[in-house]
Length: 118
Image (cartoon, rainbow, N blue to C red; front, side, top):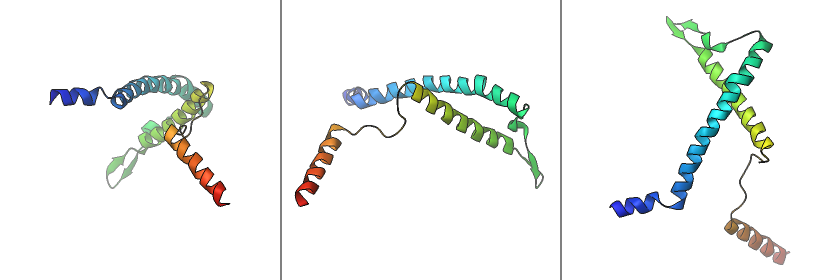
């Protein structure tokens, strides 16, 4: 059982996934810092210091803190924008990955079959 576990953990895809998760977490810190420490203060200056986090409404005797939800949406949009521009600056196009060699071969075969039928 130990050898099976070891072979599972040492497969390339598991190691690649682990590296991707670790790098993604570190990159998340960079993007979050950019949004929290640079972009949000600038937006605060522009909007006069509006902070959604404190917004709440009393509904049926219960405080509904919708401000946190609005702030999460704003943060999500800003992180998405920052990530887009960081990837663009790094020379990577956000979008679908390049086809695998087998997908490229199947596409080529499909195109050849279409050409023969025409």
